[in-house]
Structures are given as C-alpha cells and as structure tokens.
Length: 535
Image 1 (spheres, rainbow, N blue to C red):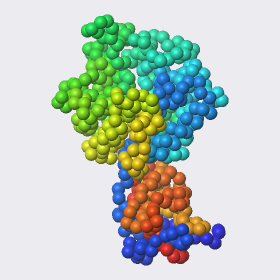
Image 2 (image 1 turned 60 degrees about the horizontal axis):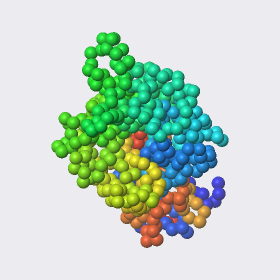
Image 3 (image 1 turned 90 degrees about the vertical axis):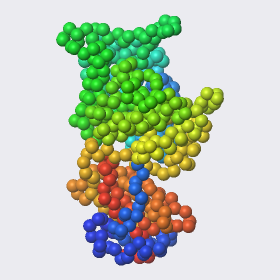
C-alpha cells in the first residue's frame, strides 16, 4: 500500500464509534492540498434533499432514417460515429434514457433468426452491416457505459413502410407468410387477427428480451393501422382487409361484434407481452406509447379528435386498469393553447385513468421546432416544449416525458437543447422507481475511502453480502450548505471527477445510497470530510 493511501470502511453499522462530533464539526473545509479525514455521521444523511426523479428520454427513430442512421448505406464506422454523437448529446443534456426503434416493419436492427436486417441500415433488406457489428448490442453497451437506460422499441404489426424502397428479403413475412400480410393503402400490415402472426410478433419481443440487456420493451401507437380513405369529399374509410381471420372466428362460434373482436386481438397481445416480460426478466419495464386522446365518452369537456378506441382498436384505458404495462407515454402532440386537444387536460386525463399507479410520461412533439434551414413561421416556439415540461412537473411531479424525436435535440433546434441543458435540466435525475416489479431495496452501502496524491479522495462502494444487486449509486456532495446531486454507475470513482463546487465552498460532506435495477433506494450513509489527519 502506498504511504498516502489511508483507508477506512464506513457502513451503517458501527456508526456511533466513528462519530467524533456533529455537523458543527464540518466547518473545516477540504482543499486540494489537505489530507481529509472521514467520519460517518448518521445525522448527516437526513439533511440531503430527496433524490430528483424524472424520466427524461427521447425516441431514436430508425424508420425512414428519421434519427439514426441519418441515411441508408453508411459504413459501420459512420453509423457508430453517429450513435456515439447521439449518446453523448443525451448525456450532455442530462437525459437518463433513450428509446431505440429496433423493429420498424417486421425487420431488425439486431442479429435475428426471425426477421431480416432492416433496409434502413444498408439500403437492402436482409443485408447485415459490413464490417459486421450488432447495432442493438452496441447501443446497449454504449448507453449503459454512459449511465443511460436503453429501451427497445418495436412496431408490432407494420410489415412495410411507405418510404421503403428495397425488395423484401427472402425471409421477410411478406414472402414466408403471405396470408398474414395485407396491403392497406401504400403500406403492408400484419393482420392482428391472425393468431399465428401475433404469436410471431410476441416471439420477436421475447427473443430480444432473452438475448439483450434492455431496460425496457416499448411499442408505439400502430396497432390496427390508421384508417385509409378514398374518393372525393366526403371521403370514405377503407376497412382493414381482415375478412379471412374474421370469418374463421365467426365460423368457430365467436360471438363478439367485429370491432370488439378486433380490440380483443390487441388486448390479448398487450396482456401476453406484459406476462412474457414478467416471466423472463421481471425487472424490465414494458411501455406503450399510444395516440394521446382517450375514449370519446371519457374525455374531458371540450376535448375532440380521433378515437383510437374505435379506429385503431386500442383500449388503452383498459390496459391501465388491468395493469398490463409499467409505463404509458401518451403522444400529447398539441400546443398548450390548442383547446380541442388541450395539453394539460389530456395529461390530467391519463393520470386519472391509472388505478394501478403505473408511470405516465408525456410524449412531447419536440420535432415541431423548425429544423435548420426550415421556415420557422409554421414551427413551434421552443418555449412550447419547456412550458409543457413545466406543466408536467406541476401536475405530476416525479413523472417525466419523452421527446419525439432525438434529431431535434441533436440539431439544437431554435436553441432548445441549450435551454434544456442550462435551465430545464440543471441537474441529473434518477428514473422513477417501479416498486411493483421488485419489492425491497438494497442494504445501505459500505464506503471505502482512499486519500489521493495531491488532494482529493477515491471512493469504492459496495453493499453487504446477500443484499439485492445494485445498478447505480446516488451521491450527494455538500459544499458549505449547498448540495450537488450526482448519479454514479461505477463502484469506484474519485471525487475530483465529480466535484461541482466553486471556490467559495469546498467539499465537506457526502451522502450515498444504492439503487436496485427497478430504482428502489437503500438507506443512506452520510459522511463528513474535514481537514486533518485521516487516522
């Protein structure tokens, strides 16, 4: 052991024997030339403020190359460089999660034996990246290395998107199971009424869940497709071509009306996904991002618009009532002054439909801000997004929001990213806990402290044998009377890397807690740092 490395193990037990004085003894501050001493003080921990909790995420859309990769045919090196840029921007903004689209149209952004590589990578469906790498695996690795959650986003039923140009691969569902796939408008759709097709979709989700260390499984608002119309005004809706599956249901003695039967198909998939996630990796969260307006007969007064219950056959209110999801991200893609689709009443509505206490995060249309070179006259002002975030914090503190989509933050449209970093996201935040997934919390951490040459300290964190696994650590640094919050993802770190104090107040205290993989927080350990010998 080097002569400057004096160590002490601090934990919740034995605290009384380590306390020499109360907080009044912390007035002697640490600077770069002092050798600190470390005293565990249980009276210090209650003084730290609550850990800030807020889901701050962005969707990373791969369909039509909206967010990543920026265009088809980039080399693996270029794709990975863009990936790193997105991840670094997310960290810079103090986001804590990204929701990456990994299945756009019965395709894959990962190595799959069930579906072909997406054309939005190479330009040719079925063609793997060259040189080879697994995009989803690398996204997860790099996100976790930066302390970000990575949720895998799937479209459950689309089979070909309107901007697709590649010929289908030989193993695409349109080729291997043509009876499942229907032409509807200018796209192809998997028929939700085909039980074998729903089984396949579920198998895709479970395959990713088993093989990849994702933090969430996420689906969007495309269940049955949005209606296609034809003819002159008044236009007529074209019914979805599911006659064969419907007729089999009727011939088999089914008694539901057709629209109720369609809803039952979607309900069944949602319930099966939730049950599947719980059975395979119960700590992984299942989230749904539906259209933002609820059932017509339940809506707040004055709210009007499209009914996903009647047109997409999505009974979202039922899914919340049954607890078939862990978080809901209604797409609240309207301005706050748009009375027929008013943001705040719709936000309140979805929170009111939540008897199981699941997370409700607002989906924000951040991409409505003008892109570089676009006409700003038809765009939203950046204050629309910051005001919506402020409204979420007032109406549902401790919840969160998701930006659609990452490209708007990457481009810093109308200076929004700068504003978020400087003002709205002025500190990091933990993802809200999901205690219904796992009971209990880790034990209070133990802290091994080492003085560093030239000043500063190194901490090594652990929990007692038999404690719950720890995913991350919450660290409060005290500068004078001011607390600075950090989230740490490594067991060992130096305070030099975390210090955020100014010259007027040096670091004089720490409070540390451990968090499990669903966000439950351990008891806190408080530690005073004072000038002098670390005997």
